[in-house]
Image 1 (cartoon, rainbow, N blue to C red):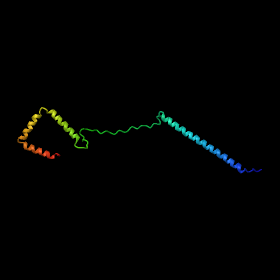
Image 2 (image 1 turned 45 degrees about the vertical axis):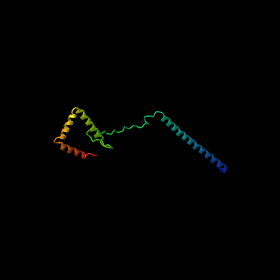
Image 3 (image 1 turned 180 degrees about the vertical axis):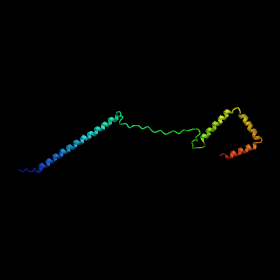
Image 4 (image 1 turned 90 degrees about the vertical axis):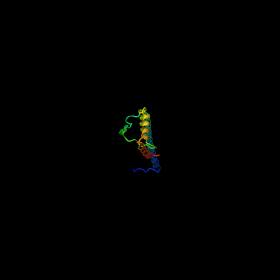
Length: 139
């Protein structure tokens, strides 16, 4: 005997039940996947709150040290902005104070000998040298 054909109503009912089963399977898969993801997120959060393991910590690189320049007093002084040369000013004031400390007793005698030299025969050459030095200075 030949099989009887199913009616249209039975066919549509069968299709809808198969569709419902597929949807149920998909939603179950999605819910499992989202649960797995949320579980992974929670695990990450708890791991970050706790102590970090040595395997996850990146290795610290020590910075390479640059060779330092050896500075000596013989090197040229740094260029400074502003008026005057501060290094030269400091050295002049230091030399001047050292001279006064060394020759404190001889300074009055040196002044009298300089005055005598200006009034003596070499006074003209000393005044000429003084005028030439003034012409080089900035006013």
